[in-house]
Image (cartoon, rainbow, N blue to C red):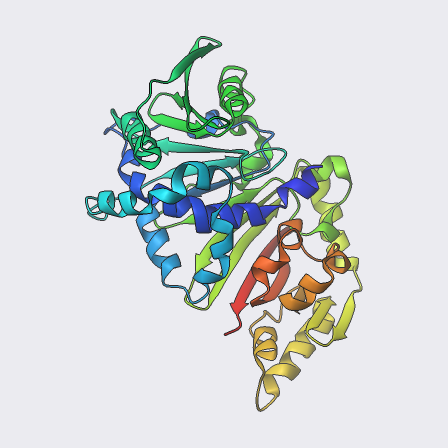
Length: 381
């Protein structure tokens, strides 16, 4: 189950990169924590989540994305789940509020949960006093109403439930130096459980080996799965893996770079699978190769050609030292996504139409017994 759901990172990419970021931009001031108070949000995130996204600077994030040539390609995905129900229509209010940012960094974390629909997320704000009131005020502005929340107590903690229409609501939990907001009250209860029962990501040894405190201007996605299906050892072990994807946005390209982190019992198995694989597919708009002995001469031959198509340019930009490479026109994947189940994570396969305007280049390299990866999406103008 988790292999399918974690890898639905299209929800991550769409909801986060192209929905939630827009809506939360106006709440940037909420992330400023009182001096000396640093909330340990990871100690509240349930360890059975399918993935998390973290960024420290929404202002940087929004400016980078809005300048990308491909930003409009994901417009249809802005009408998703909590982003639409709470945040996405707040853009005007958001940009009015944003003028007071003065370049300050704004830290948010978002966790994704089973069954991994766009509604199954929790948004965590680092904030000081009064932050909750600003969130509630923004919700009221969106729906043009004023209302008192329904207050509930769960394990001694207060959850405030704000109805937004006849069938929907927002659950809000104010912790020590942070605010958790979700479309699902059960997820807020899971946040409280994780902290009280010590079953959070802070207690997950594999996740903590993958997690790194970043410097500035970062966007990082952590997926609770192997980075590629072909690297899976068995279902039980794969459920303990975490893959890191640092998100980088350029005008015509965005890419996800990082590595796969596993229990010690799995590391040698996955590396051996990669070394022993003998894949070789070379056809129109698709290249799959494994083994440095094949990859290095193939890329060198492409580089030596006097001229290159965009597809060939993507090949020539890959590393000669890679252990596995794949280059594919996403139009081809969209026509037959089932044929690529062994080669691509399901977050791409679940919504190939979102990526159809790109050529995808993938490379996996073994470095000191650990598998690093990079997924490059090159926009076809």
